[in-house]
Amino acid sequence: MKTKGKRILVVEDDLPIQRNLQRNLEVSGFEVLITNDGKRAIELVRSEQPDLVLLDLWLRGDVDGIEVCSQVRQWTQIPIIVVSARADEKQKVEALDLGADDFLAKPFNIEELLARVRVCLRRVANQELESATHHEALFTTDGRISMNLSRRQVIVGGIEVKLTPTEYELLHQLMMHAGKVLTHRVLLRSVWGPEYGEEADYLRVYIRQLRRKVEKESSQPQYILTESGVGYVFHMPVLRGNVDALSPLPESGKNVTL
Figure 1 (cartoon, rainbow, N blue to C red):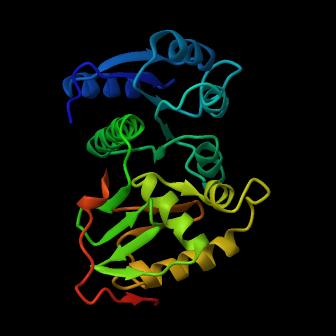
Figure 2 (tube, rainbow, N blue to C red):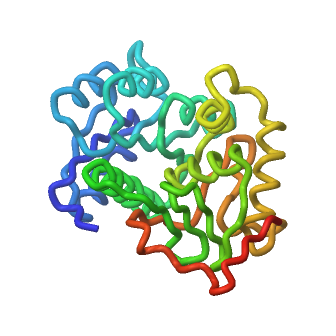
């Protein structure tokens, strides 16, 4: 995707890492803003409207990265990638629950970071296109899984697969946010409602059932992957389109319930 003109805010208190990020991002065609202060970061998001934020959790001053993420999410859905030495699962889950789009632990490979930046920016571009265009279908780029949203129909490998309403909503959430790690709490509240959030074992049962219906081998999933201790991610890129873009059903028109 084109990166020229895209503006990235780097919120980082380690000077060598600041310089390394700025140099590599600029070489890759991005415009870069830099700050090491949480309060200033919030001000820059408001005034400069960057396309993406790279956010460290350890910051100088009274406002840390968690608070930056929380406040920024009150008014914008700008992509936030947390890049931090705080690599424990609790901090990772907290950041993702507050709305961070991804989490990369230090030390990191710069090529991996750049790849994640591009994925986040591509997802935003697709979402903007989605909001401007009425789409009736989601389908994986390999053509194996598709969802007819108007008919609530799921096709796997050219065969219609019957999902329960809960399984359907779970797959819909995962495919709509393909490439983004969704925490247990986010999925539970999105599918079951705001009173849920701590029932990870409950969610695990539904994920297992869903994998049996959409994966080639449920024990070796290629689409719905587990982010240990955090949640799940739909790994395959997903396209949005009209119903006529879907693969046709077999001539027999038979349904299968697995």
